Image 1: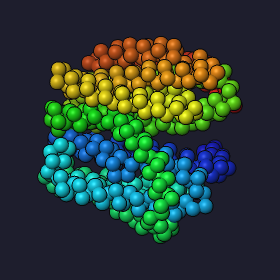
Image 2: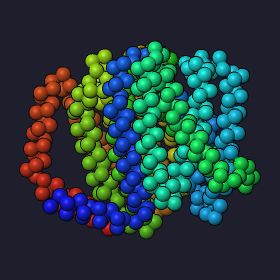
Image 3: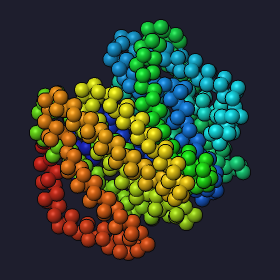
Image 4: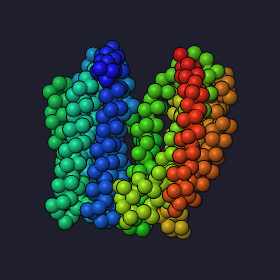
Length: 488
């Protein structure tokens, strides 16, 4: 009876949610399910594929993020959301017209790939047929992305959820079948997953065209190109920043090591969706405080969130060896030493949020672009030197150093902008607290890493921490309530 009452109460609260809140909730649920499906199937792939074959998948997924910038100009992001507001009465025509623009860009990319196929294949270490498939894959994914953006705008969460979950399941199922039934397991896993996304994407593309009925619209093409072309180096630097390590490892050390590093990277970033959910909830409130210039609680709230994320990441670091054995087995265990610096990098990446928000609020995106390009160059140069001198493990530490440098540079820029606009930077940018949190986190992660060979000691420490938390749970709840009250 109590269970039925509880379920009824939860259902009642869900039904009373505004449509926008339901869309956000279902998008988070779908993201969790996507990650969960991928997490559950990864141990299958790592055990029936060689490290080199797993590395081929890692390499394809790394290059697709770079090629996407040239074939779509990332029109599915900033400019698309702006256009939804700028052209509210003609959103469907805008959607179909920029889909047409991306189709033209994709056709040009296919032509270049056919002409320069062998050279590009040598550079990217992938067969020409996969490069051609990649362009078609990106085009289909673009159509799905802009359709999903429209679903969020129109609060059509049911259709969006069905497509995300169904396509994710089918991609993994056909991926497993392709791997089990062929010898070229790496390439065939890529092809199987891509075909599923392409079929869904093309069906959605036809729907988008049927709704908008515009392939070319001069005004919309001009707006989209004018908005995104100036940001192309920013988008490219962002992607290079995040994927250059795996590409360089494959080129300099071997595809098998790229596979090992790729699995470590996947595990380290499992909590990205949690951080993203926290960020999406926190950022609108942050902007409201800046707009009203009521920033007294901003620093305290950010410190609390940073400490909470640090605690979650530290817990994750403690159990990383067991997660790695579960997902990859003993063959991938050398990657255990890669995970801690990648996890630490996530915390410093989150530290950049207050400074990034200040730069966006005051429309000083040039500083953000300069910081991203500079850190991307730092990442490439020191990845090359580090991998040559110390081996592929060095890439993880270069990634951590890059995020620390990114955080420091953005803080300096944001501090200067706050002063220029008569905002109290000490109430907005918790630099000193972040520095102490960061140093403490690095020290604790270092201790945790040293304890990796001693499983029972690690879990003993976790047990003691759990007991302390249980004893003081009332204080913890009161503290959470206190900081949540700051948002009101």
